[in-house]
Image 1 (cartoon, rainbow, N blue to C red):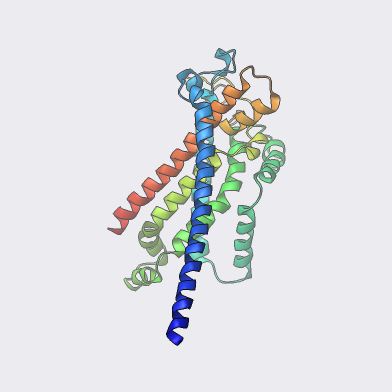
Image 2: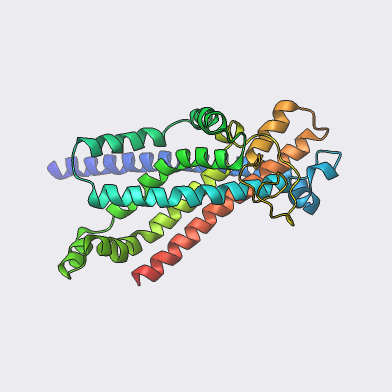
Length: 304
């Protein structure tokens, strides 16, 4: 009788397990299907413009039917590079301090809580603060440096959390081994912890770069909504047409999509918007693929 009861219980448990597994698979399949439909729709709708060289690299002033997105494409990558140059060293230093050097006291706990709050701060709030401080108070106007610093405020808390988790995932034995060999804490961090955590750090940086690349709300109020004609033969950093001038306005791809749809004056609005969205989506997908490739490559080489 007891064996029968155990058998019935086991059959019921297996049945519940199959039902739960089926539900989870259905949910995951639905999400993948929805994501695939969204990506496919954007790529199909923008395919006509996405593969047009004049659209990708042309100047808006050269085309009466909406122009190209050459300046916006360059501005997006240029803003991203400047943002990473500023934010990565700050985030790396802050994460190393919090993990390896910070004492366990109230101030450190408050700092960690502040980082958590800033990491979840809406980008529109960051944009409004950047507008009030960088654009107005600092007098930089709508410029690349204003947008880059606003994106830095948006990106640093996220990077700090990613790097902090990567460093904390390194086994404690490796720290102790380095210290036991006579290495200082800084040498242990530099030559043992960072190489071990580097695959996760690089992956986090590239994924955050993809998020920053598609940001629009924070840049509308800081980098501006205009894309001046760029002269790549000009190296006068005070010239508004110089592409390397960080004090010129810079409309990015995401801001360009918002701008042309909000104004509604472009004759071929749908085609330009769909093409820009497809290019933006492809760039973000490439960021994710590159992050996975680099993360796996570094993991194999550093752990071999």
